[in-house]
Amino acid sequence: MSNVTVIRNARLVLTDEIVEGWVALSDGVIIEVGRGAAPTGSYDAGGDLLLPGLIELHTDHLESHLRPRPKVHWPMRLAILAYDMQLAASGITTVFDSVRVGNDADYTPERSEARNIVDEIAALHGRGLLRIDHRTHLRCEICADDVLEGAREVMDAHRVDLISLMDHTPGARQFANLDAWRTYYGGKSGLPVSELDRLMTHKHDLFARNYARHRKALVDLAHTNSVAIASHDDSTPEHVRESIADNVRVAEFPTSEESARLSHDSSISVLMGAPNVVRGGSHSGNVAAEALARAGVLDILSSDYVPAALLAGAFELARRIEGYGLPRAVRSVTVNPARACGLTDRGEIAPGQAADLLRVRVVDDTPLVREVYRNGQRII
Picture 1 (cartoon, helix red, strand yellow):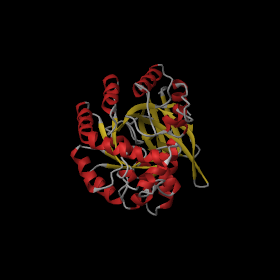
Picture 2 (cartoon, one colour):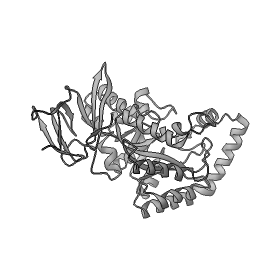
Picture 3 (cartoon, one colour):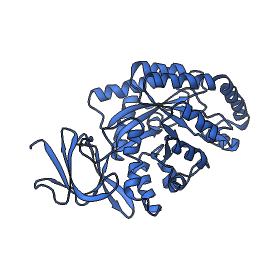
Picture 4 (cartoon, helix red, strand yellow):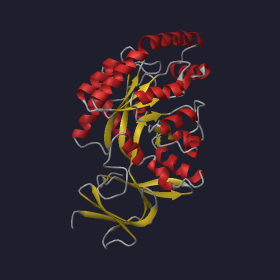
């Protein structure tokens, strides 16, 4: 058939095994997967690995394109196009764009900023200018006075696929250690110690005033609109029990093995940062992602603040942990994040799945992106 593309001579990373074979694509979908020799006239992958396109649930990288330096606001269209290109070049074919709502010490959005970002992404998609599939992940700073207004403004205008419930109160969750909080926010804000102490008091007041009612309102909003919910930085059994009660589907960056295990055992997918894997630990001093993988309670990797870390992190897990295997590691960046957010049409090399594919060559233990396909079309 003239509209069928066949990629042959590839090592296919399937859900549970790696096989030498070929893949046939038509109209943006995988129609057949075969082992061994492929039909003549097909495209030769040169013996490289062929993976499903990577799926990214949580990336802070859009912000660094929009605000590449303190007080510098880069033109939004240029920022989004560059961001889209960098994700594609990293092997990511589906991204949940992390857009923050709610003021925080290191982030003071302009009025309607989140809505404007999502508007522009939708406009670029409508004109066919984006290489990959963009979905919306609202990162909600629960205790901020303006978080409900910001979340509703976006959700009234656009489909939202994921919301995360974030609480950066000093002395809790990611920042149980107050010195770690001072170091992080002092570095990002440049505030002196005296101002940081006043900020700490203010954030404690916000928690007391807003946390309970805002969390309930955000959860209700998500359930009403059939939006998946992620918790953020769960560190205690109480946090996990709260997540269970709220029907949370993803636990982002649990800070301890105990909270990760409780989430995993409760069918909440545990997500950790791939930079944590590549670097060998958490920059905040919390539990290492590799430790959770070794304990069998890591489900999903996220590139977080380095897009290229997503592919590298999966390969590092397979290389470092005896018996872990590349198929299992690749599931953490493909099918697992897809299913956690209700996507059943991508994440595997199998008939009926989207023809989102990634050709990878490993050189000196480093995975190199050679080609990327989205809906059967080469984009890199």
